[in-house]
Amino acid sequence: MHGSPAEATQKFTIERGDLDRLFEALRARGFTVVGPVARDGAIVWDEVSSSGDLPAGWTDEQAPGRYRLRRAGGPALFDWTVGPTSPKTWLHPAAVTLLRSRRERGTLQVLDGDAPAPPLALFGLRACELAAIALQDRVLLGGRVTDPVYRQRREQAFLVAVQCGRAGRTCFCASMGTGPEARSGYDLALTELTEGDRHVFVAEAGSPRGAELLASLRPAAATPAEAEAAGAAVTRAAGQMGRELDTAGLPELLASSLEHPRWAEVAERCLACGSCTSVCPTCFCVTTEDFTDLAAGLSRRVRRWDSCFSVDFTYIHGGNVRTSIAARYRQWLTHKLGSWHEQFGTPGCVGCGRCITWCPAGIDITEEAGVLRRDRPAKEASRGNA
Image (cartoon, rainbow, N blue to C red; front, side, top):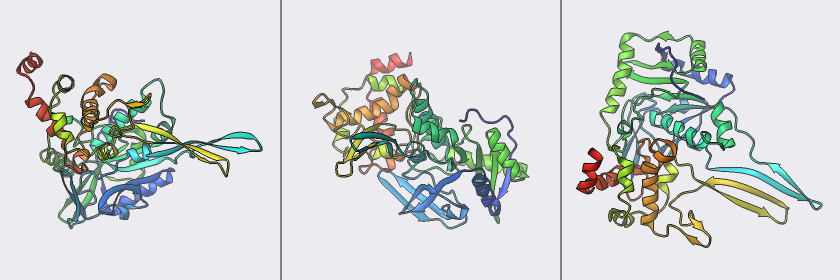
């Protein structure tokens, strides 16, 4: 697990040609390395064996309801923002077999579920994704009852961050205080620099085991110019944010806007497809299903992701609590940006912009919150500013 960054802030330089030594060091310590790859027209997370699997020369174009991956030219491995998948897929899997059972000669045997995952090294995490992992820690590990599947994967994970050198049109992490600079929560942080003929990574340890791994590579100390260039890259990304969300008094604003006509207006566009919840790196809702093979005498209990946009999500005692799309969208947005504060002391959004990009209707969470703020009654506004 990870807390504040390591006290030592010395920066080192890893040449592009030496990056595979980092992969080898991770594998030598027993980690399966997972990182970004370009596949099926998107940047997605998958197992990687070397730096050659990373998306060299690719960039992305994002807008509400639009995502395009295109060749940018050049050698950069991380000249893109975020894709439709996130590390949540590996730490909080979309489907997990919790247990199996088998009947033999009239006796029911209860068997284990899926085998524990191998130790994972998550390579290429953005600042917003580190913030999302911290939120998942709070939800799935912070209460009296913890999630054993998440705990097993999370406690063994080694986190390698890559600082953002650019921001996309749907990014708004700066206004959420979650990026674009990764300041904590990582074992190792890299900043990619491609200037002139040089292609290097400025590296910084964020934990004792990150420092140990970095020292094993015997990297050269970063020059002042390299350290300055690394900081400038993050500053440049901060100035490129495509969106902004005003979070001041937002929980109170949402609580006082439950009958606002905007919910019905957005419901005219919303398809209730659940795409926003499936790409969100912090959504954690699940359901369980039982599957039985009567002929073989086998059964499985499977936990899978669920969505508050599903009509069956609130099926209770013969009826649904939220039958309309307007009610389901309102629940999602008011929980994500409002009642999360009551439960976990923080909003449930990290400003990655995925829900905007991957909404087929191009619905923008920052726009919807902005409409509610602009239409806030004057007396409520004056009370909030008092």
